[in-house]
Structures are given as structure tokens and as C-alpha cells.
Length: 97
Image (cartoon, rainbow, N blue to C red; front, side, top):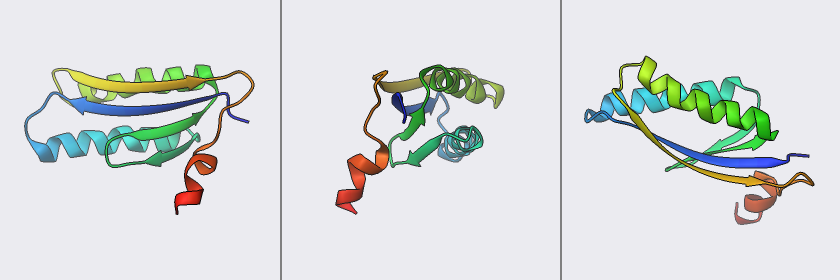
């Protein structure tokens, strides 16, 4: 049972689209490395897990673009937290696939 789900969109402050894509790809690689269940969408990545773990992921997603040369980064984050559990990505979307 997941207690939290987040959706995160990371926007490095760089004008060259190929560099933006490379940085976003690295952020997604990091999210994949966490072992949390996630789905990449065209505008954001949705991740499910424990509240504290997801807060650490959000923090790290801010650090990666800076480490890769972006002078700053903007992120849009949506958080749904319910200690009794949240609907999973599959429960929300499988009926549409």
C-alpha cells in the first residue's frame, strides 16, 4: 500500500532543448534508480511510495539539474498523501489502456 503519490515536472533553466532533455533524462534515471513505482508522462513523472522517501526524491530532483550545469531549475510538484493509502497509478489509469 502506498501512502503518497507525487507528480513532478522539472524544468532546468537552459534554452538549448537538447541540454534540457539530457538533464530531464538524468532526473528520470534517478527516479528509476530509487525503486519506487513510477510512470513517465509527456509533462511530468508520477511516483508512488512512502511520504518521506518521496520528499527525498523531490529534493534530489532539484539538485541534479544544478549539478549538471543548469543555473537554476523550476519544478511543479503535486502531492497526494493519505496515511490510509492512495489509489495506485494502475488503479487510476488501467481502465483507459
